[in-house]
Every structure is written in C-alpha cells, then in structure tokens.
Image 1 (cartoon, rainbow, N blue to C red):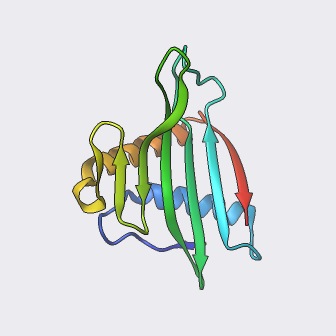
Image 2 (image 1 turned 180 degrees about the vertical axis):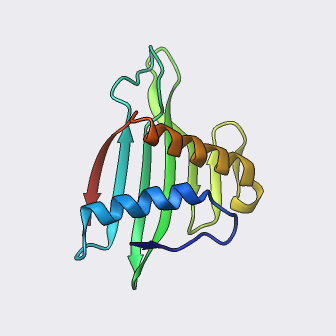
Length: 135
C-alpha cells in the first residue's frame, strides 16, 4: 500500500514503512478510512508507561494520506484523564502540543520527528496492542 509522503516536513521513513506494512497486512480494498489505535496495556496514571497513540489515514485514489497522529497522556489531578499531548493534523498542517500550544507543522519539525521516531521504536519493541477500525 502506498502512503503519500508529507511535503511540509520530512517525516521518518520507518514511520511510512510501518504504516504501509500494516495496511498491506489488513488488506482493506473496500474501505476509505483506517484508524490505528496503539495501546500499552500497562499504561496508567499511577504507573506511567508508553502513551496511547491514534493514527488516522484516508484513501484518495490509489494512495493513502495521513490525516492525524495523536499521542495521549494522563493529565490533571486528583482524577487524571487521557488528553492530547501531541496532535499532528496533517491536512491542516498544524501541530498542537500541551507544552507549546498550537503552531504550523513546518515550525514543529524537530518535535514531530522525535515523537514519530520514538513511536516507531516502541512498536518495534512490541510495546503496543493494536486495534484497527475502518470506515
């Protein structure tokens, strides 16, 4: 499966390869939207762990396009809730981060690449359980 490469910033190639491999494995010719949910079963507000991640792609013609990548983390107290820590909106070319707020994708090159590289390493380590939904 072919994923359209982002042109605003250069994303890590292993990120594309990971998604292409997973799209090929699920073989979904009749669907146009795919959402991958990656969860560390041991992640909790009390013990920490690896943040949950959600990735959404949509099909346009013969290519898949990145819609968003969202990294969640427990925040707040005394009753912490999962909130967006980093939200990359590829179509809008925007990034939200809980530390620096919202900015254009081109201004967040380093943090975006860092998060995506780390995510790929965590997947390689077998940290996540993956759930896939299609529309």
